[in-house]
Amino acid sequence: MRLAEHCRERLAEIRAADRFRRRRVIEGAHGPEVVADGRRCINFCSNDYLGLAADPTLSRRLAAAADELGTGSAASQLVTGHNAEHAALEAELADWVGRERALVFATGYAANVGVISALMGKRDHIVADALNHASLIDGARLSGAAKQVYTHANAGAADTALQACEGGHRLLVTDSVFSMDGDTAPLAALADSAQARDAWLAVDDAHGLGVFGPGGAGRVAEAGLGSDRVPLLLATLGKSVGAAGAFVAGDDDVIEAILQSARSLIFSTAPPPALAAAARAGVASARAGDDRRRHLHGLIARFRRGAAELDLPLETSDSPIQPLVLGAEARALTLSDALLARGYLVGAIRPPTVAPGTSRLRVTLTAGHSAAQVDGLLAALSDAIHDGAARRRCPARESA
Image 1 (cartoon, one colour):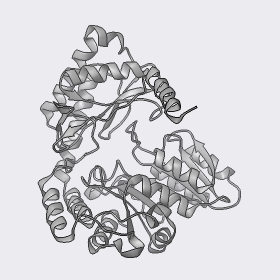
Image 2 (cartoon, one colour):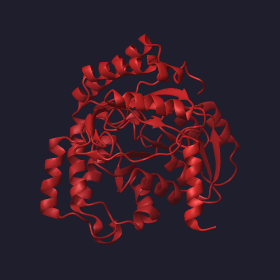
Image 3 (cartoon, helix red, strand yellow):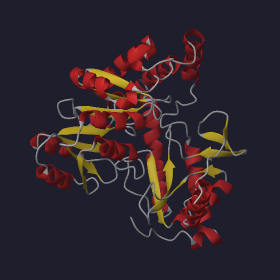
Image 4 (cartoon, one colour):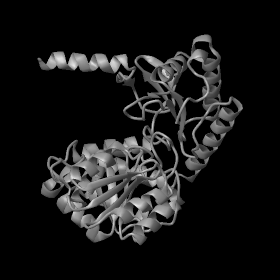
């Protein structure tokens, strides 16, 4: 069979299952209002939680740094790609999250895959939450370590799995805020289990950084967990920070060992120094962003109150991620299309991103939104659900 024929068959299967995805072309800046495929709409599916992705402070810093430093780093970090802007960004990130040192990667995926595979091997054991991000799953796979998956957010199940590990090192891995459900891992209980079972705890705080904790330092900081309890703290710079990239933070020797071993860092060109400069501006804005956080959490509460009045079956979440689980793929697509027709962009999330039978709308709120925009989304949801065609496709939640 020719490759093209094989791919046509695969694409036909994806379409038949209502799982075909396409990229929307966004014109202009990525903010709370966007032009998507030529249509102006209010965007409720971005991870720009503090509204910094189009902030003039970051864009001016990026432009000035690009004018001074150019557009590329020209080499990997261990050759000549490590610029003074990268070094300053790492120092500021470490200070923000209360760790001795931080190490910047090009993407969150590269960070998670690189860190896990750098530290774990075939004789070791990884215990992971069932709903961890794909990058954490792939990092575990690439490491070659034995892997056990525990019931989502169940600290007791994690402890049992750790206790069953024999020989080698043990790594307990979890997201802090889960990207598709918006709920939070029981971080303190997981830290207790890791400590009791002589395991290391790695937490990906990608969706918690900037939103929670003192100065926006994240869910781990909010829980009061230092490097003795969470020796591997990971997060991204492309969400609340409004830039791009990711980092791992921890004790000096831990970070040095990762720097010397992480293939996704060693064999990748370093991010542009101008981008690091923009990220530094984003970090400063996020740390000083208590007003943004207050506004964001007010919008989250407002949306949840309005959804309750409409009997919308939201998941339990105090984060900007507010999923409306609908069940079948077609139902999520229908409601997403109905909202777009009313001027609201909310993505339909389907397998394999989520489990079969749990397709959903993933509503994400940002500090860039207004109360009027949140009220408008609620009204549009109500209209779409009670519209004749949409109502047949949006009963009460089918399954979790």
